[in-house]
Length: 562
Ligand code: ATP
Ligand code: MG
Ligand code: MG
Ligand code: MG
Image (cartoon, rainbow, N blue to C red):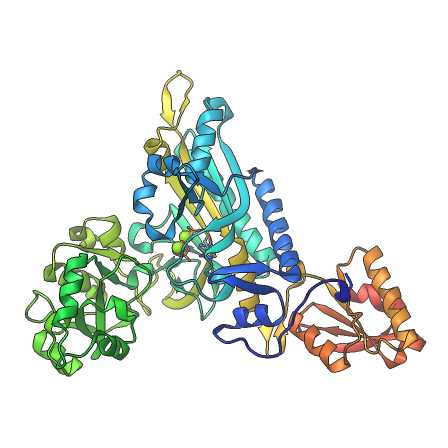
């Protein structure tokens, strides 16, 4: 491709409100443009990298015995009503209606559609197991879209679904998918780990996530320093939500008096969003005051109490102490209903938080990202063990360390969750109707692109691994007015193409400085600079990753490119 014929709108300035490397660099290198909050255009370079990631995914999926199809993004509400998710998915599901007033959703995921298709077209055990996948746009109205492609509201996902007659068959395909995912992320060049999802608390053997290791990751991983053990400790981060009736909210505004701190003041003290500060409990975690939010709105996302598990002590403050911390009478901002103090030590921290808040106010609370509150009876959490940094690894090998991760993939044994809800059946050998046993397997394709950009960059720009670089070779004639340079550049450009290398030719009449800066920013693996020695057939080859460069005769170029 000639640079004059494509669109790579590079930027010199770091764009405002892009605060992580990958987001900044993908914008600056002209890979993406924001069309709306959490909605992006993939510009020509990003499209090529996406295609390469998708090609790797397709190869591995096909190898694992999955067949590709393409389901609609526009889905009738009836399907979501059958599964029940119409009522439970919440605001993240993009809902709409057609001109006849019929309800629809834009696919956040496709369990419902695929289950209905398979139910209609796979009536017999003879066609099972069956694994189908697609690569498609998904829609989720995320509360806080951010970090560019990492958390979008429209994004590309590979999702696969498998159907079985037995748990053993599901295990088998699940394991194949696991291997395929290991291959995919390895081929993308990523530094990643497969982790037990939902933490060690439920064993996690029926669901695993693939985490790209990165400081900016939103998940915390507990891993062993000397074995493969790794788990997502999502549960360490605790969000407590209280859905306040609208009338109560109005009352609250009324009682805000001048001698109370305003909600905004309190929220800035604790560094949380104002609208969430409507009701709360104040704790001291290792003597550091922390507000546990009892939220006043439905938008549950990720206000989290960080590092609860790392704490030595967690104390619930009583009204007096809360007032001291806030420096004002608490009124509705103080602890509600729970007098006295609870003091706990490290491994019971989460449990105590759960306890304290339940004690404080029975009705209207529930827990998000706290598995015991969400997935189990709260009373049962005594059975769970919370993992901490420095603990011996649960598999008996080594010590637990914590790291941050970006979830790029997730595999899940669904069992009969959807087939039962939607009454989807096949006939077994004896002609009896049985629910399909299912698995589902997702990869964030656009998120993977960002995760790669996050892991592969330096102070000058992106540094693409060869497998997924938009082009392999960047051919740069320094001076477009120099005929020797131009014709050698054309010759080498053609040479690369005939030898099936993806090659980008910078045929713009820009100053050399601009060309080199752009080239570093875009980050193709190999740069071939054609300058002063063009007439002798000598060019400079530079490896983006290492920075090493050497002059070579044009005849020696090809063997060097690999
Ligand atoms: P997260 O915990 O980050 O919200 P999730 O667990 O909700 O992700 P899944 O339902 O497991 O996501 O979807 C499968 C994959 O889709 C995820 O592993 C992730 O890579 C990707 N994904 C999910 N949400 C987004 C998003 N908002 N933007 C980009 N990719 C996403
Ligand atoms: Mg999510
Ligand atoms: Mg997740
Ligand atoms: Mg997930």
